[in-house]
Picture 1 (tube, rainbow, N blue to C red):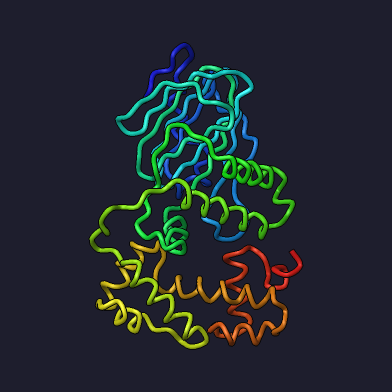
Picture 2 (picture 1 turned 90 degrees about the vertical axis):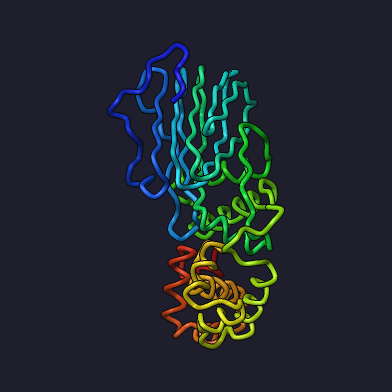
Length: 310
């Protein structure tokens, strides 16, 4: 934990903030200059499975933050005055004065800390690694690794982050679908501009060509039952080993990936508007219209009819 330069360390009682919200994310400890919790400007996420959580905090006079996160943390700084930061990722430290709107990126599993003197708003966006891996797989970027960054600038990510915070603060005034689409665009932007590709494929993961074959097979049989055993045969692995390797590579189980592709096609057909919901459910391999509606609500946070009206 970094030492605060001229203001009190956070009280021992402040082990974490928002324990219910951050139970799945990890431990987060914050305090402002007087040792009290900062003001919460926005927090939470809309219904659905965006894989993204927002927390915007206002620190008066100074900032102290430590985190050990199971999720990727993307932090934007917004200052009304020049602030000096001392930041640590694992055993790496840096002292700097980031500009307003700068972004820090800390991949999951890395212990981090930050101290600053001065008032600052911080927008923290937590990304579920499984959702990130799925977005990378969809971009044909299997094994993409998020790049650790103390400071940088990404205008598009900053704009999306601000939009997500505004939506959270206004109780998702534009609806869960708008939130989930902004969240997807944010994660896609991370994959496109803030990742590196390993020189060699990691052991125990799928190759890009294998995933392409699996995706093509699922699309070709979308209206039929798709057995994991058939996918395992295509990948040249036993069903048990295949399920573990697939989840490690893509971020979801084979079953959830099949549902993911079914939903993608179902949403396209729903928005096209030329088929009934019952017909779309049959064409995309769901048991019935109710089954499809359940998954649309679970993933997008809205009903199938709202996909069109929103």
